[in-house]
Image 1 (cartoon, helix red, strand yellow):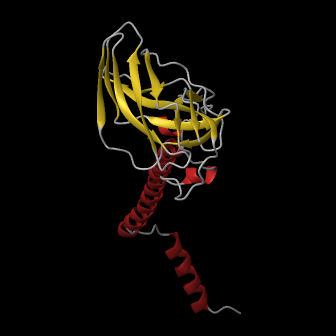
Image 2: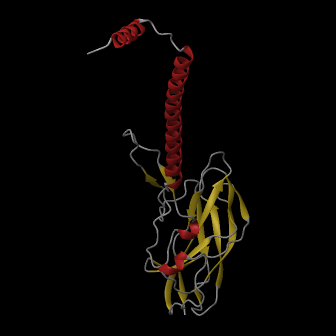
Image 3: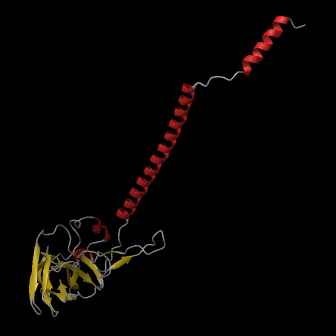
Length: 255
Protein backbone atom coordinates (compact mmCIF):
# COMPACT_ATOMS: atom_id res chain seq x y z
CA UNK A 1 0.00 0.00 0.00
CA UNK A 2 1.34 3.42 -1.01
CA UNK A 3 2.38 5.60 1.90
CA UNK A 4 1.52 9.25 2.33
CA UNK A 5 5.10 10.27 1.57
CA UNK A 6 5.08 8.40 -1.70
CA UNK A 7 1.84 10.10 -2.72
CA UNK A 8 3.33 13.54 -1.99
CA UNK A 9 6.42 12.74 -4.08
CA UNK A 10 4.29 11.58 -7.00
CA UNK A 11 2.16 14.74 -6.89
CA UNK A 12 5.30 16.93 -6.76
CA UNK A 13 6.81 15.26 -9.82
CA UNK A 14 3.56 15.70 -11.76
CA UNK A 15 3.52 19.41 -10.88
CA UNK A 16 7.12 19.84 -11.93
CA UNK A 17 6.46 18.22 -15.34
CA UNK A 18 3.53 20.55 -15.96
CA UNK A 19 5.73 23.71 -15.63
CA UNK A 20 7.12 25.26 -18.86
CA UNK A 21 10.85 24.61 -19.34
CA UNK A 22 13.39 27.31 -20.18
CA UNK A 23 14.83 27.08 -23.72
CA UNK A 24 18.61 26.68 -23.98
CA UNK A 25 19.17 29.18 -26.83
CA UNK A 26 22.90 28.50 -26.94
CA UNK A 27 22.36 24.82 -27.60
CA UNK A 28 19.76 25.59 -30.27
CA UNK A 29 22.12 28.01 -32.05
CA UNK A 30 24.97 25.52 -31.89
CA UNK A 31 22.79 22.84 -33.47
CA UNK A 32 21.63 25.33 -36.11
CA UNK A 33 25.22 26.27 -37.00
CA UNK A 34 26.21 22.62 -37.29
CA UNK A 35 23.33 21.95 -39.66
CA UNK A 36 24.11 25.03 -41.80
CA UNK A 37 27.78 24.09 -42.00
CA UNK A 38 26.86 20.60 -43.18
CA UNK A 39 24.69 22.08 -45.94
CA UNK A 40 27.53 24.37 -47.02
CA UNK A 41 29.88 21.42 -47.30
CA UNK A 42 27.42 19.53 -49.46
CA UNK A 43 26.93 22.49 -51.81
CA UNK A 44 30.67 23.17 -51.98
CA UNK A 45 31.36 19.55 -52.83
CA UNK A 46 28.81 19.61 -55.65
CA UNK A 47 30.40 22.78 -57.08
CA UNK A 48 33.87 21.23 -57.01
CA UNK A 49 32.64 18.15 -58.81
CA UNK A 50 30.99 20.29 -61.48
CA UNK A 51 34.21 22.21 -62.17
CA UNK A 52 36.25 19.01 -62.35
CA UNK A 53 33.74 17.57 -64.79
CA UNK A 54 34.04 20.58 -67.07
CA UNK A 55 37.84 20.45 -66.90
CA UNK A 56 37.94 16.78 -67.86
CA UNK A 57 35.55 17.37 -70.75
CA UNK A 58 37.65 20.27 -72.06
CA UNK A 59 40.93 18.34 -71.93
CA UNK A 60 39.32 15.39 -73.64
CA UNK A 61 38.03 17.62 -76.41
CA UNK A 62 41.45 19.18 -76.96
CA UNK A 63 43.12 15.78 -76.98
CA UNK A 64 40.74 14.45 -79.60
CA UNK A 65 41.37 17.46 -81.83
CA UNK A 66 45.15 17.24 -81.50
CA UNK A 67 45.31 13.48 -82.03
CA UNK A 68 42.96 13.37 -85.02
CA UNK A 69 45.34 13.42 -87.99
CA UNK A 70 44.23 14.28 -91.50
CA UNK A 71 44.68 11.68 -94.22
CA UNK A 72 47.71 11.76 -96.48
CA UNK A 73 47.16 11.56 -100.20
CA UNK A 74 50.32 10.04 -101.68
CA UNK A 75 49.12 10.97 -105.14
CA UNK A 76 49.85 14.59 -104.35
CA UNK A 77 46.31 15.88 -104.78
CA UNK A 78 44.03 16.97 -101.97
CA UNK A 79 42.41 14.32 -99.79
CA UNK A 80 39.57 15.32 -97.48
CA UNK A 81 38.41 13.70 -94.26
CA UNK A 82 34.92 14.37 -92.96
CA UNK A 83 33.75 13.02 -89.60
CA UNK A 84 30.32 13.35 -88.12
CA UNK A 85 30.14 15.86 -85.29
CA UNK A 86 28.24 14.93 -82.10
CA UNK A 87 25.21 16.95 -83.23
CA UNK A 88 25.16 15.28 -86.63
CA UNK A 89 26.78 18.18 -88.48
CA UNK A 90 29.82 17.58 -90.64
CA UNK A 91 33.12 18.24 -88.89
CA UNK A 92 35.67 20.57 -90.53
CA UNK A 93 37.59 18.84 -93.29
CA UNK A 94 41.33 18.37 -92.87
CA UNK A 95 43.50 18.21 -95.96
CA UNK A 96 47.05 17.02 -96.32
CA UNK A 97 49.23 15.65 -99.08
CA UNK A 98 52.60 14.03 -99.25
CA UNK A 99 55.66 16.25 -99.82
CA UNK A 100 57.36 16.09 -103.20
CA UNK A 101 59.92 13.47 -102.16
CA UNK A 102 57.18 11.17 -100.87
CA UNK A 103 54.63 11.13 -103.67
CA UNK A 104 56.22 8.01 -105.19
CA UNK A 105 57.10 5.31 -102.66
CA UNK A 106 59.46 2.38 -103.17
CA UNK A 107 57.79 -0.53 -104.94
CA UNK A 108 54.55 1.42 -105.48
CA UNK A 109 52.87 2.69 -108.61
CA UNK A 110 53.70 6.16 -109.81
CA UNK A 111 51.28 8.77 -108.53
CA UNK A 112 48.91 10.55 -110.87
CA UNK A 113 49.21 14.26 -110.18
CA UNK A 114 47.11 17.08 -111.58
CA UNK A 115 48.91 20.00 -113.29
CA UNK A 116 49.86 22.88 -111.00
CA UNK A 117 47.25 25.65 -110.97
CA UNK A 118 50.01 28.26 -111.26
CA UNK A 119 51.03 26.93 -114.67
CA UNK A 120 54.48 25.87 -113.45
CA UNK A 121 55.84 22.72 -115.12
CA UNK A 122 59.09 20.79 -114.63
CA UNK A 123 61.14 19.12 -117.35
CA UNK A 124 63.87 16.54 -116.66
CA UNK A 125 67.19 16.83 -118.51
CA UNK A 126 69.61 13.89 -118.15
CA UNK A 127 71.84 12.15 -120.65
CA UNK A 128 70.06 9.56 -122.79
CA UNK A 129 72.15 6.81 -121.22
CA UNK A 130 74.23 6.21 -118.08
CA UNK A 131 76.01 3.39 -116.29
CA UNK A 132 73.74 1.17 -114.21
CA UNK A 133 76.63 0.67 -111.76
CA UNK A 134 77.21 4.39 -111.19
CA UNK A 135 77.20 5.72 -107.63
CA UNK A 136 75.14 8.68 -108.80
CA UNK A 137 73.95 10.14 -112.11
CA UNK A 138 73.81 13.95 -112.46
CA UNK A 139 71.51 16.04 -114.59
CA UNK A 140 69.22 19.05 -114.37
CA UNK A 141 65.56 19.95 -113.97
CA UNK A 142 64.04 23.09 -115.50
CA UNK A 143 60.92 24.81 -114.18
CA UNK A 144 58.94 26.86 -116.68
CA UNK A 145 56.00 29.19 -116.18
CA UNK A 146 53.53 28.04 -118.84
CA UNK A 147 50.75 30.24 -117.46
CA UNK A 148 49.67 33.75 -118.36
CA UNK A 149 50.52 35.44 -115.03
CA UNK A 150 53.80 36.23 -113.30
CA UNK A 151 54.59 33.67 -110.61
CA UNK A 152 56.74 34.35 -107.54
CA UNK A 153 57.54 32.38 -104.42
CA UNK A 154 60.04 29.80 -103.20
CA UNK A 155 60.85 26.12 -103.64
CA UNK A 156 63.34 23.67 -102.17
CA UNK A 157 66.93 23.97 -103.38
CA UNK A 158 66.62 20.79 -105.45
CA UNK A 159 63.70 18.82 -106.88
CA UNK A 160 62.86 15.24 -105.93
CA UNK A 161 63.75 12.70 -108.63
CA UNK A 162 62.05 9.33 -109.15
CA UNK A 163 63.54 6.40 -111.07
CA UNK A 164 60.87 4.01 -112.31
CA UNK A 165 60.17 1.19 -114.73
CA UNK A 166 56.81 0.21 -116.16
CA UNK A 167 55.06 2.60 -113.78
CA UNK A 168 56.67 1.20 -110.59
CA UNK A 169 58.96 3.27 -108.37
CA UNK A 170 62.48 1.84 -108.04
CA UNK A 171 64.17 4.76 -106.26
CA UNK A 172 63.35 8.32 -105.22
CA UNK A 173 65.20 11.20 -103.58
CA UNK A 174 65.62 10.69 -99.83
CA UNK A 175 67.78 11.55 -96.85
CA UNK A 176 68.94 14.92 -95.61
CA UNK A 177 67.95 17.87 -97.75
CA UNK A 178 69.75 21.18 -98.30
CA UNK A 179 68.14 23.65 -95.90
CA UNK A 180 67.94 26.43 -98.46
CA UNK A 181 65.12 27.90 -100.49
CA UNK A 182 65.28 28.76 -104.17
CA UNK A 183 63.62 32.06 -105.09
CA UNK A 184 61.12 31.81 -107.93
CA UNK A 185 60.16 34.90 -109.96
CA UNK A 186 59.01 33.90 -113.42
CA UNK A 187 57.13 35.87 -116.03
CA UNK A 188 55.00 33.87 -118.47
CA UNK A 189 57.31 31.73 -120.61
CA UNK A 190 60.34 32.24 -118.33
CA UNK A 191 62.20 29.36 -116.71
CA UNK A 192 64.85 28.49 -114.14
CA UNK A 193 67.07 25.41 -113.73
CA UNK A 194 68.00 23.21 -110.75
CA UNK A 195 70.82 20.71 -110.37
CA UNK A 196 69.55 17.17 -109.85
CA UNK A 197 70.78 13.61 -109.50
CA UNK A 198 69.59 10.06 -108.91
CA UNK A 199 71.08 6.72 -107.83
CA UNK A 200 70.42 3.73 -110.13
CA UNK A 201 69.44 1.28 -107.38
CA UNK A 202 66.24 -0.42 -106.30
CA UNK A 203 64.71 0.32 -102.88
CA UNK A 204 61.91 -1.49 -101.03
CA UNK A 205 59.06 -0.64 -98.68
CA UNK A 206 61.28 -1.14 -95.61
CA UNK A 207 63.44 1.77 -96.74
CA UNK A 208 60.48 4.12 -96.30
CA UNK A 209 60.56 3.69 -92.51
CA UNK A 210 63.88 5.52 -92.14
CA UNK A 211 64.92 9.07 -93.10
CA UNK A 212 67.53 7.65 -95.51
CA UNK A 213 67.65 4.45 -97.52
CA UNK A 214 69.89 1.56 -96.50
CA UNK A 215 73.45 1.46 -97.69
CA UNK A 216 74.41 -1.09 -100.33
CA UNK A 217 71.12 -1.28 -102.20
CA UNK A 218 71.33 -3.45 -105.30
CA UNK A 219 71.95 -1.68 -108.58
CA UNK A 220 69.34 -2.03 -111.27
CA UNK A 221 69.95 -4.27 -114.23
CA UNK A 222 70.78 -2.91 -117.65
CA UNK A 223 67.71 -1.70 -119.50
CA UNK A 224 65.36 1.17 -120.24
CA UNK A 225 63.96 3.22 -117.36
CA UNK A 226 62.04 6.42 -116.75
CA UNK A 227 62.79 9.55 -114.73
CA UNK A 228 60.43 12.19 -113.32
CA UNK A 229 60.75 15.18 -111.03
CA UNK A 230 58.60 16.95 -108.42
CA UNK A 231 58.99 20.00 -106.21
CA UNK A 232 56.87 21.94 -103.71
CA UNK A 233 56.21 25.56 -104.66
CA UNK A 234 55.14 28.12 -102.01
CA UNK A 235 53.70 31.28 -103.61
CA UNK A 236 54.31 34.74 -102.22
CA UNK A 237 50.62 35.61 -102.40
CA UNK A 238 48.99 36.02 -98.99
CA UNK A 239 47.22 32.88 -97.88
CA UNK A 240 48.54 30.91 -100.85
CA UNK A 241 49.04 27.22 -100.07
CA UNK A 242 51.99 25.21 -101.37
CA UNK A 243 51.36 23.36 -104.63
CA UNK A 244 53.07 20.39 -106.17
CA UNK A 245 54.86 20.96 -109.47
CA UNK A 246 55.77 17.86 -111.49
CA UNK A 247 57.26 16.77 -114.80
CA UNK A 248 56.34 14.27 -117.51
CA UNK A 249 58.26 10.99 -117.66
CA UNK A 250 61.45 10.90 -119.73
CA UNK A 251 63.32 7.80 -120.78
CA UNK A 252 66.90 6.88 -119.90
CA UNK A 253 68.93 3.80 -120.80
CA UNK A 254 71.05 2.30 -118.01
CA UNK A 255 73.71 -0.18 -119.10
